Structures are given as C-alpha cells and as structure tokens.
Image 1 (tube, one colour):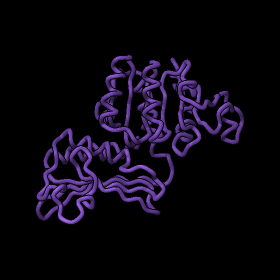
Image 2 (cartoon, one colour):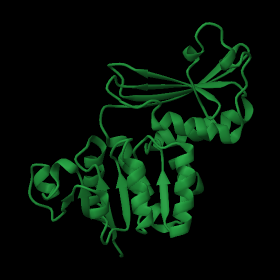
Image 3 (tube, rainbow, N blue to C red):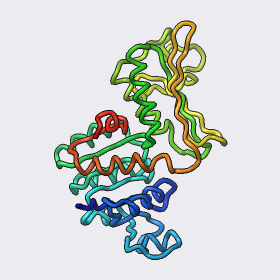
Image 4 (cartoon, one colour):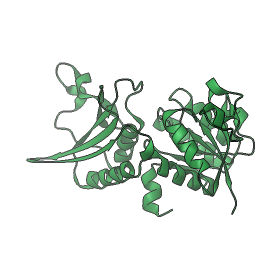
Length: 268
C-alpha cells in the first residue's frame, strides 16, 4: 500500500491536533510534517507532551512541504489563503479546513489547482452530518423560494459568517436566488439588521457564550416553515472522519471540490 505523506498546519490547535492524531493512526496516511509557529523546531510528540514521533514542526507551510502529498490546513482566516496558494504552486494537494476564503478566492484557487494538476477539497465544515444537512438544504431550495441562514458560534469566534454558513449560502445561490417580499436593501430603519448578503442570501451571525457551532437554513412558505439545522458539540471529533476522507480525495483529484457533501454524494 502506498502511503500518502501529509502535513497538518495548525497541528497544535483544537481541530488540527485531533486530525493529526487521526492521521498517525491511519494505515494509509503518514504524518510527515506539521506547522505551528509557536513550536517550530520541536518534534510534534514532544509538543503534545508525549514521546517523540519523528514528526518535525515548522514555522511556515513553505518549509514543511518537502515530500508531502497533501496539506491539511486548520490554521486561521488570515493565513489560509497564503497557505493554499503556496501548496498548490508546489504541486501539493490541499484540504481546506479553515474559514475566511471568499468565492473570488476559490475561483483563483480552482484555476491554480487546474494549472498545477493538484486537487483541493474545501469545506466550511468537515462534519459528515453537516455535509448531509447542506445537501438537504440544496434540495429544499429547488422547491422553496424563500430562505435565510442563521449562523451560531461562541463569543470568541473572530470571523463572521462562519465558513459553514458562507459555503451554504454560496451553494444555495448555485440553485437559485431567494425571493424577498421586501428587498433587504429597502428595509426601513436599519437595513443592517436584516443581516449580511452572502451570494444573495441573508445571513445572520450570532456570537454568544454557550454556543459552539450551529447553522440553520430556514425556509418559509405561507403558514409553514422548514428548518434544517446542524449542531456541533464542544469536541473536534465531528470533523475528523470527513477531513481524512477529503485528504484521500485531494490526492486523487485535479481541480477544486467545494463542500464535503460533493464527495459524499458522488460516492468517491
């Protein structure tokens, strides 16, 4: 069996550590390098407080990509775009687990991936249940013309909307644009109270203590309403299996795949 060499950027972070440990436990994946600026120069096992694993930690993605097949990025919204472009130009596939990239960013990344012959799999949420919720929302949008999105996260989440909410809005826009009885831009009083328009969909982001992550797509018709809601608990466990699935897919593909649900529904 040929092993896929993997680099995890953000391997000391909340999700990144869980994913890196899962790579170590996988028979077909090898954790070759890690990226964490605060631990650069150390062995990842020692950084985690255990025995050395033979996995060097680097301060930059560019330094960590030698003999790497796929980069898994769980860093920050400020760094992810640079990391993805660096890897793709180096001929390394990428799994994008960090939020912060716009539709325009992904258009550029798609072109780069095609040019350099590598696969990029990006998802606002690598939870299998979140992916299925997105697929259900796309189906609903084919039949129900009115919808909005509510995005919930902890008070400390620095970006809004979440990657999950942004991706969902963009996926629904690919089905059609929602209809509004009163265009949000024409709202009397404070139009900003109607939320942000993401790909034509109004998205409302709540940042409060007590939430981890949740996204709702709310669809309405006269005298009835459909709510498709995904919630995640306080551990990173929901995102591990989908990330590993995407890692294997990125190594075997060329070009950009948006959304874990695209992989699940294709059967790949």
